[in-house]
Length: 244
Image (cartoon, rainbow, N blue to C red):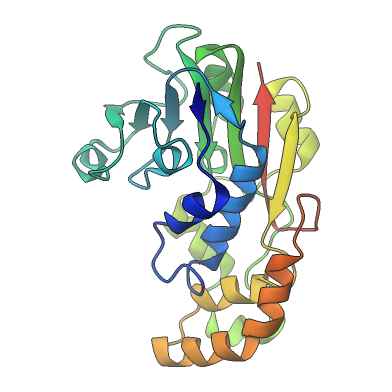
């Protein structure tokens, strides 16, 4: 059996710079993913749209990973420590046989794919019976910046969506359930109304010095918001787990 990394070890692998300030949102995402991921798996993992983060390798350090992405350049940018084989491919036409993997991941991927239903079904197809599909995605109702007072200092959310390559804002739970033909087994939210301020600042146009001042001023309440965030706390994004 291949065991999931302990939470602290997993969070320490946050690939986003300044993981407690600019990258706090990514730390929150990782914690939510950890909450829905199975404690142990038996076989290899397919990380669909994994880019160069190596997130699946951090979550299951001893697993064999196949990272699939459309951009062939990402093949030479895989983390040197990751147990990962890179495959250039399309999430909607996965080049693998049925039942090939124990886990398939779609971390912040579905909102970038026009034919999201096909991508979801392909992920299910290549996972063995009893295996898992892990997903993270924004909620359909998210907005940026979360706090109106930050609007003068932030790019418009449409600008960020273009930069990030979104083809849709996000999902409501029933919409995701329809993609996978059933509700998820587990769900855990992240980025709540308190910690969202750090997310606003991280993607603002403010310089580093001003961001540091705002982080320092908001740190006490943000720390409380982070510590008290449970799996079902109101959040702007969510992680899910489906079992085949």
